[in-house]
Length: 96
Image (cartoon, rainbow, N blue to C red; front, side, top):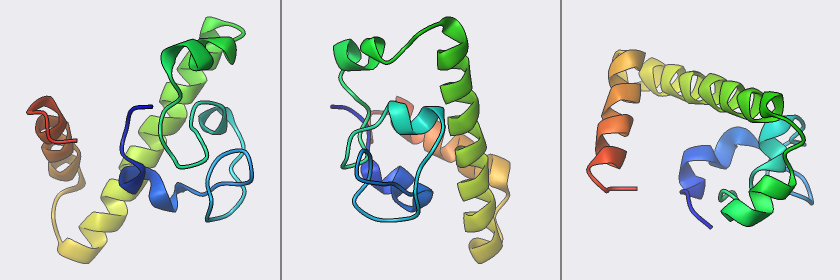
């Protein structure tokens, strides 16, 4: 599995997805494991019925990214866009 569960720890979950948090419904819940990591590619592909499923997952994840960036910004006074860009740049540099 790939990904970092800390980035999505507050997203929520249920018995099929996360150990902690509120029940997770929707596309995102179909692409992550119980510990909050992305499914392996082969397992993920099995959950996809059509390209719209993938778009829905990406759309939901983008909303989660901005939600978390806005929450961090409220606590730190940083610009949410700068937080998102900083995370993207850090991931691009290999720091997951």
